[in-house]
Length: 180
Ligand code: AR6
Image 1: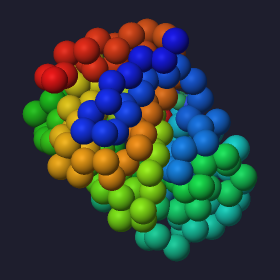
Image 2 (image 1 turned 135 degrees about the vertical axis):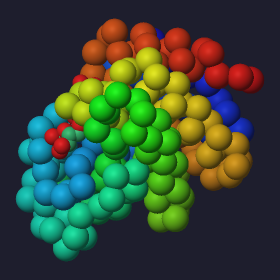
Image 3 (image 1 turned 90 degrees about the vertical axis):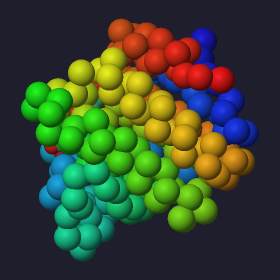
Image 4 (image 1 turned 120 degrees about the vertical axis):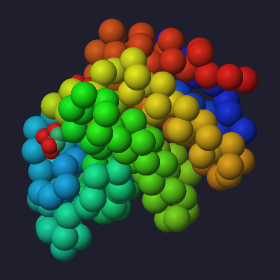
């Protein structure tokens, strides 16, 4: 079963799965400031997408934390990859929440700037970067809801792709808690 809500004309969907298999206009990569690859989502995307993504990333000259940059998607079913750099979580007192909100907002804005209509996100910063997932889910969904309300109907679909059933359950709870 797919959980979801429609917010200002945009379907916000939660699924358990693999981000590399999504056929949305763009998938979002949980990247680092070098944009030169890594483990987790980043490793999976470069492995499945092939070398053209890294070739494009090399020309981008990195990306600051809280921001996002777009490339093609190589052999992936998606058309584009939005490389988004979430914060490393230290203790919650180093601007982590603002930076996580920023990375979701900038990712959606990047999709809109390129005329894209559907985007799939992983749970940014909650793996290697250790952001506590309940707080991260509330920030992710709250930020996306705000951005789509500001641009009603500009996007058809925002899908969150959670790797595990427990992570999906956390996002379902956060989605249900969003104000109408
Ligand atoms: N599809 C969907 N979700 C996945 C997948 C997948 N194929 N693989 C892992 N996850 P992480 P971060 C989940 O570590 O915390 C890299 O080295 C995973 O279980 O990928 O933002 C980068 O280069 C977790 O819930 O991203 C950076 O250096 C979530 O995706 C650093 O890790 C995010 O985990 C970024 O760390």
